[in-house]
Image (cartoon, rainbow, N blue to C red):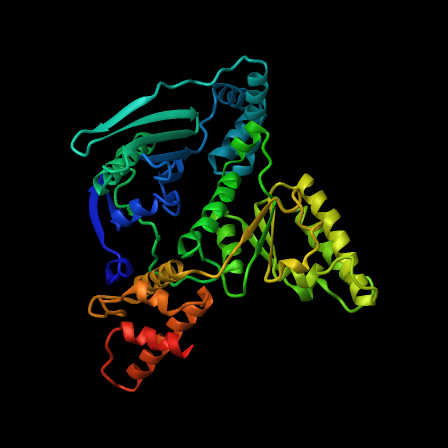
Length: 477
């Protein structure tokens, strides 16, 4: 059986509220949601006051698919905030001067004045003098598509749309109608013409026309590691919703250990997690820590954590090849072993302090040799999440091929130029590449691309990359 339809995306396009919506491989998307929840629309740009829309399709419950859209907006000023702002701006002669500065676009002054209102609002809420405005749930329905949904408002800056469709009945039409519900809710918040001219892609893969780099890689681009990606998405959600964490007094994970064979994508996953959170990325390599001079290594590891405590924006710090920095703590009596022991001891204490002092930072450590890392270093409380990143099986390798080929198609194919043949059998490619990793599959594609480019450069007639081209490259790797 060929899998060309999975390699080359097939989309339907429709319009609503002046926006163009491209729904890509909806049937495949809904089938994938039976295994793991699928998150959509994360990279979309929305008109103010809407900041973000998170669309999730979850079919893991068995009996039904649950479609959930969470629409986040910029919080509106409360009555108390508006009252206090008016009070401040009416103080003569300070008020008129501040008002002129705000009108001229001085954001510092605006934040200063609004800060008074925010503090007052918090005090009023604490005293029970200002109650949040409660809005009744709304019911949405599309009879022709056979879908109904509920729109609720958990707080003054969030709207949630939820629909439940029996698993055996759900189809692309339900997803299309639910998307319309979202667009209608957005236009209610942002205005009737706010979506005019915008383009949205509803896609499991979020294929881009721009070549991905290590800086732009996302979890959408990761193939064959569904369970790992699902766990990382949960961690990202905890960072994106600090208000929910605070409400329940929950401490999100701040230490993640990823271990597995070389080439399975641990470093890529770390950077993808940072991008998913919207965090800065800092990679710490062994030469930055280990120093030949006495006391140098200890000083370096302290400096890393000293800097981390000062970060005021979400930051992911990656200790790549973690075992080479702190391996075999407590073993050996030579100078090198003593230096490693000292680094490991400092790491433990600094990690404890960082977790208590700065919730903006998340530490990720990766290693190919987990048995070389002392268990006390990675105990719960320091590294709450431990993720095995295995070599992919046949199905996972087929998925990696699909993701990588689709990415290349999105970047390079144009009208009149086909990069890949229509009859690719991705399952056969997955089986033929037994024992290979994602890095190996990337190298297979690189070699085939290079061979085709060299033929083209010599003026030969070059056809699309075929099944045989890929199988030959797999055999030659």
